[in-house]
Image (cartoon, rainbow, N blue to C red):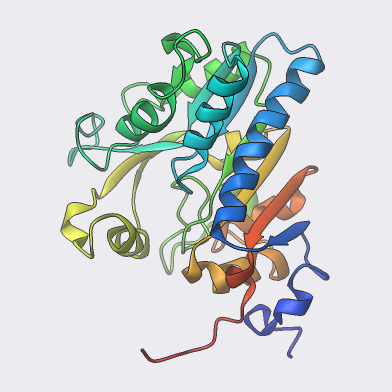
Length: 283
């Protein structure tokens, strides 16, 4: 094992010598279950600290946790009425001026309505005015909302194949950007990288790359890094390489999530198969 090469870090050493605390759990189901448990535990903890409104930045992927949260809230009468949800991102129309249609199967707004808000008992759900998506027509509305509520309590998320958090893809090859400059990027409209559109087409459109929008609106690294806590969940087989760059490589804009190495309270939850070495295997 070459410790200078993050991609050679063995499964046994992945967590032991990581620059970010990481916990390896059994499988995909364990990652999703942990996400659901953490969401409810962090909400209760924030309310216990006296927070009037609890602010979470939430992703759509991984998927499966919101049904678990809703079902438990419904069964136990747990109210999320004081939760302010800021979704990380949303796909945009070709001109980048508006969200894709709410009835598009790729719409993150559609997913949250179907799998979370619409599944919760109405009296337990966050009210509509506390459900926020970044708006390409007013990107500054997201940081204004965060500031109005005294900051973000927890940013939950996954990791893209480029190492992006939300849709903060790295600079294109040959495009210079320091870690400090990348960390300061705010909520904005972005053009998705080829890699991100490709992997999203594999997971969401059966390889139909043309079906994946080229533009999106995303919370920035600035809003993510300013969150009091960051919790990351990884359950995709193709994350085996990028997780090693994030946990064992240098801090660099070319691997956006590596900037989390400098955060005071961050933790990764990783499925056992993601911890496997990213070795080639023809199928």
